[in-house]
Length: 343
Length: 274
Image 1 (cartoon, rainbow over the protein chains, first blue to last red):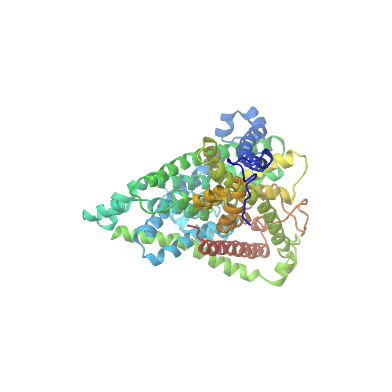
Image 2: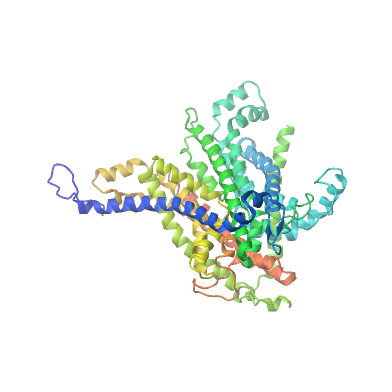
């Protein structure tokens, strides 16, 4: 089958006729064009999005749109501050709750757990990424939020002296529940990246720490964590990007109230949720405002993900350094793990 | 010791939500499963008992149709771009740029893919929602996942294999089609299945592209229902029976996605390239 015949086999040098070279060229340029198409698509999307958002920017001003605290559809006022703040609060909560748990899971899986437990544990955490976001929303609004309401009210009453946290009445959809569900949703990706980065710590460094008399935890603290810091931060930022862009679960859980939430357990809105919720019946300036919200979201996630990529890449480059000895394909393992974690 | 205990506790905490979700899905979801549930379309009635609200047939079929077309677009395109990255682009600046943008694309919120398709295929053509437009949105979402997983596998193929084929006089395209791709394909199945699983669960890109409808239809040029969108609309209903249908649909969706994940894992265990 595979007998590639040499054209003019009697010739001394192997020269293909121009016709025989044609498929090669076609394939090369065709594939290059396809790759270029990806870049073109992203750039085109950006330009079109700016174009669609222009009317509302002309009306409110870019600054006025992003920082105006008045989202009133019937009065045609579009200030997106309540949405931006909602996105930031819920994403920050997701990081605060999710990252420590994710990193702890990664430490446990790479350094502490019995070898037999490692694979099942990894699979279970990654299964969290397989649950669709609409199912998280459904579960959050009908199970988690009602179950937590009492506890939240207790905390809000006890901490009533604290601004923003204490005080008001707890509603079922609220910032906190949204942040909590987002924390669960970003767990797999943050954990997967942290685990991969921790696996790159040279074993002689760990052994050196243990040899100097460190306990296992001291070894983790002095040898593992400092070595992986930028990788873990990168993973957390990828999680942040995920939390910022999460749409459906947030739309169901945050309460869709276009005002700045008075407190942590009150209703709010987010950039992604406003698009999902209002785009269907939006007209004119309203639609343009939603495109503008999409643009803000796009820029926000680009910045966060770009920074995250640089950090993770830098951490991944460390494994090219000699003394690694794990025999893994550089970058390969991590990327596959990320894919499995739903990246 | 204390630190170790804290870490173990945190790990356990990480697993609790999964257990709770699975438990509630089974408890609430199984209750609404019935033959009728899978064989009838939703009726749109929300005021009556569960017997008259209908099932999720159109949603299941719609999801399968939309995702199938999305896969048919994104899998060949994704593998082609991965081949370009590994065989032609390599470490050139252009390839690095493409790689970076593919990574960035992974992080773009799914609802923005919906907006993009809306701008291009609905505002751009002056038409309305259709199943195939939803497929395009999902294809954009799957593309980066397919590309990066395929690239990982292609990188694992030993260079000696390519060089032997080239030394035998095979042109590059022959090497790619007869040597590289057949060797890599079994390994690529995993990433492809995970991409399909991810696309199947997405709601946001479908809201303004394929929209929702009640009837089953097999024409991707028409409005099309899908499981995630059906769940999303049912969640907001005040009627208990409709919410129960959402649980049943959610269980169906999760079972479909978990099956894909399971197959992906089995396949990846079978075909270790390294």
